[in-house]
Image 1 (cartoon, rainbow, N blue to C red):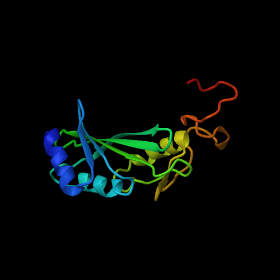
Image 2: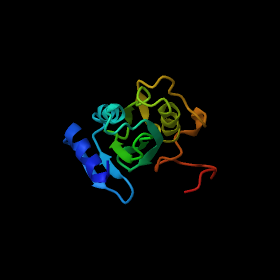
Image 3: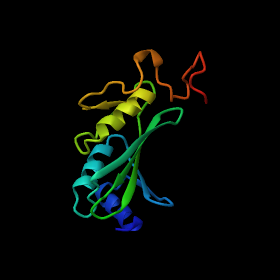
Image 4: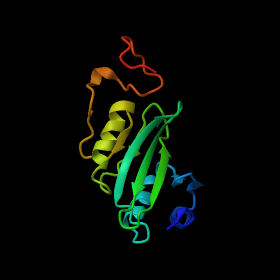
Length: 151
């Protein structure tokens, strides 16, 4: 599938998804409540077969947090980018995709450790790099009293 066909497939599965044809890959933005079901369909459909979660990136947008998923199909060779945002900043929560891609377990732990986004149904959500005294150093409102993290 090319970028246009991938976008059409996503629209057939989730009509509310916003799709932008990025320079390299189609970029699909969905509501946090729709992310898991769309990801599962992208993984299980023979037409898309996104069997490889390349990475998950957390983003602090100021009022909410975003999480970006890069997916690749080893069978078809195409890629797609899924984006979503948490519904609030004070208690950021998304549903885990660990049941779809096992590698999400460590990616989600990293986003949790550095931004504080919690993932429902994660099998072992605990900090990956830092202890709890750190807070969440990639948040824009993080205060670094001793200048370990530079901005």
